[in-house]
Structure formats: C-alpha cells, structure tokens
Image (cartoon, rainbow, N blue to C red):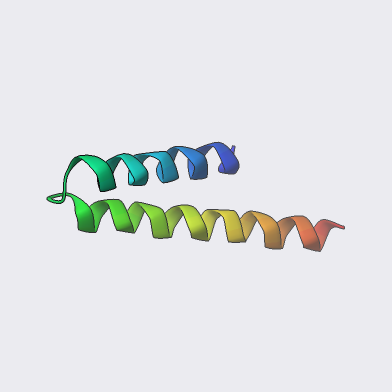
Length: 49
C-alpha cells in the first residue's frame, strides 16, 4: 500500500516538473513525502527480518 502511494506521488511530481511551475513547491513536498514513506517502509521491513 505504501509503495503504491509513493509511486503515485513520484509520478505526480514528474508530471508537475514537465507541466507547470506554479505548483512546484507543492509537488516537491509530495516528492519529499514519497521518499519518507519509502524510507519508513524499508526501516520497518528490516526490523521484521
């Protein structure tokens, strides 16, 4: 579930880079959120193993 959200946010960020600069700040916040979600998922997965 978290991976899906992260991928969607990264795709939206890439679309934002190509389409418009007005939403640039918001899109970059989404990218940061996606990276944080992926890092949390990796950390949780390592704790379980």
